[in-house]
Length: 354
Image: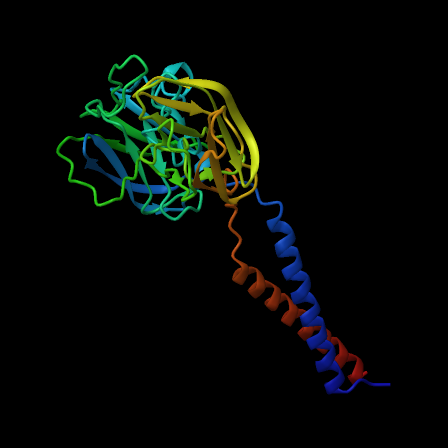
């Protein structure tokens, strides 16, 4: 029985749709095995000033790279500058992965009063990628607002003539080199060095002894915090009384769950106490309500204060780069399908003429 032209057309359309669907499926299957990119981002940046510090602004970034795939350094004639902050690279050198200084608070200090970091990465859009509009801040050697536990001034590391570099890990290429300049224009970026502070609850608290929690000191070493990365949290308790106070307990809570405490601590009259937690992981992404309670034996109600720390997820270390244009793939599948339909139609017509 001979097939009609209508039957042949329907069969051709069905074949075309099947081949098209198979082609799309193969395309997405291949995407799952695409190797990571080794193509470096293209970056243009400028140096700007902020008080005694230096701001490196990403003016244009093409093919933005994850902070996990980027490293920074501050160099002097190809020699890496020394930096003994907690976030510096090995051997006290001012070089490290960008994710290690993500949102680092440049006023946050360790138990000895030394800064946690002298370089911070400000992610404007909180996407975990070095992209246009993001910027780095480098504490300058003339920045004298930090003193260690001995009362000695702790300067930064930035100065005129040093070079700030960004290296893309996957390709090994230096994608940005900017010279620090004291004549750089003043930045219009908001350089917020104390990201978050405790807010005192309005609950009635004891008046004697006269203690209070500082609302002007930083709360955490980084804000926002990257998921899976540890941070340190601190509280500064001030003794405004004329007598020493002892047997104080200080407790930290994350969304109501206790995670750190210090007991039987003392504060001298007119002095302040800084309680610093060990490095901690806040866990899931989102906003975390950090509560601190300060209690002395003769009180029934503790002083309580709150701060919010946000944890965000970050993308993979590198992004897929083996670029397959889906339109090219679909066009190729379309041509193959049409050719198959035409050949099938010609064969059918040949059979009909027999």
